[in-house]
Amino acid sequence: MSGLRRVSTGAPWEEAFGYSRAVELPNGLVLVSGCTSIVDGEIAGGGPYEQAVNAFKVALAALKQLDLGREDVVRTRMYLTHARDVEDVGRAHKELFDSVRPAASMIIVSGFVDPSLVVEVEVEAYREAPES
Image 1: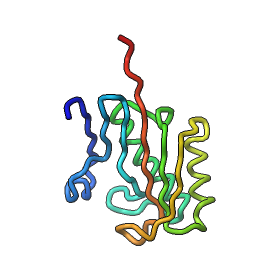
Image 2: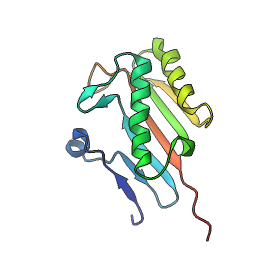
Image 3: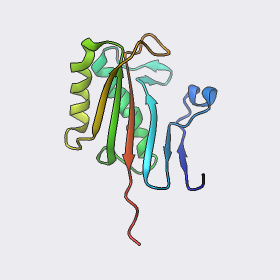
Image 4: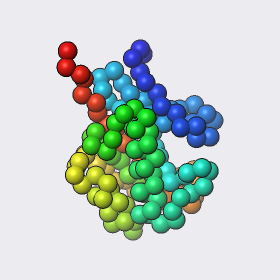
């Protein structure tokens, strides 16, 4: 498909599993892959709040490579391993996106690739087409 833009962050799983951190479609929709709190090979932040903040920062950094920011986010998905973490992850989301108010989902899953991870997030953003 022509007109696609892809972002790579150099994370080891991108190469090993063959995916991009983010993909921008010609219609202006930007899809950011699942992001966790792994920074430079280490989990940054131990609790669910800290992991959520860091995971969203990874996603926002990918958007920044496409000259987009949090104000362009239209949808978020938060995957958690424990229902008890809903409030902490929700608080992190509110702090980052309260003024934006994207569509959002919070889903409880059985686990992640690394069992120390308790949160993974996905972000979708939208870029309006320039006026002709």
